Length: 158
Image (cartoon, rainbow, N blue to C red; front, side, top):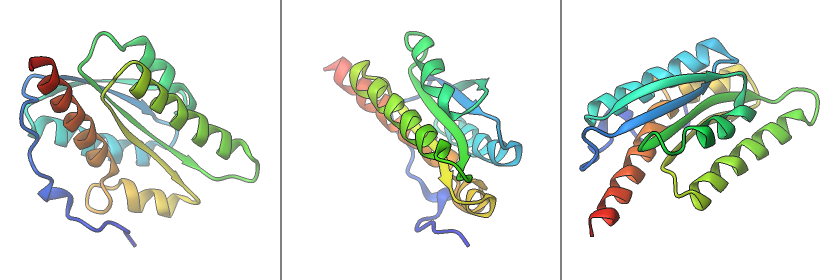
């Protein structure tokens, strides 16, 4: 069951992002989940007149590093992946450090990053959050990224 409280198809358009170049950095560790996250993100980006490229990294831990390497080449970034809790503390480190790394990039380098790393207890929860007809967290992350790109463009122009 989805915990979504809004309909993903009614996200408001983001003004001022036409032509923006967005890099989607994806961890494809869980193929079915990654494909759903990507579909939502790509649809949201296209709907708002921006373009995107994709790069795949081994896991969620590597997403901040890839974004840091590409920081000066794109207007914004969408971080997509899935981390499922296992039997060890590895989950806690991957979730915490990937989130911290992305926030550090956002604040220190002033990057527009949409956070779409789904952190869950099991695959069913991941499906509820990732599938485009359910949670559509890929679309949410892309929308957040585009909103921040629009804000950055607005302030650069003033």
